[in-house]
Length: 216
Image (cartoon, rainbow, N blue to C red):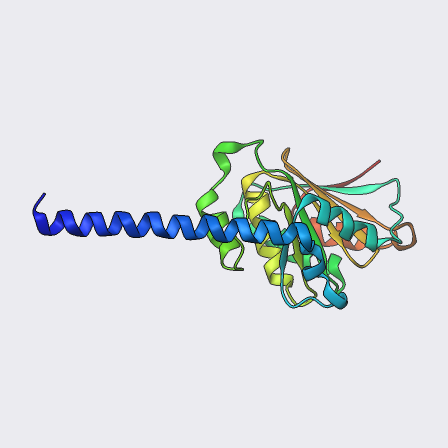
């Protein structure tokens, strides 16, 4: 290595170390600040949200406890997930629009490690970083979408389907809920007072030549 390139390499290495130290110091300050002021307070400050947030497990539990009013029926609609990405995208978009009722919705990933070889972490974290978030999925498995972020919800739900994750979908509106299984099923639950919606869901799903059955 020539002296000129050796100096350039040394400078680059020093800059990398400096950047890493600054990053670690910033993360440490953020975590100390979170201990003094829970992050959920900033997320739900005065009941106003500005854009999608990522929530820790305890923050997910706190958000769900605020939801209330949902009384699931003993029956649910179980949809077999197709292999084709385009058909999965259809399902993700359809339920993102139909289940949220123009209200916020929480997508909580409960197990992303069942099919590890399916996971494209580079894709997922680049997508996540586009929302200015750098936490790991195990640190903050909750994805809280606002009423106008239906397409964002559809995108993350599509990713969860493609990667074979276990996840829960809980809209703030107390009419629906869903569970995504790594076994290739999306189980949709309706509130006891909204059972007629099952027939509409089933009609649309079967019209798209997908398999859906009522189960208990």
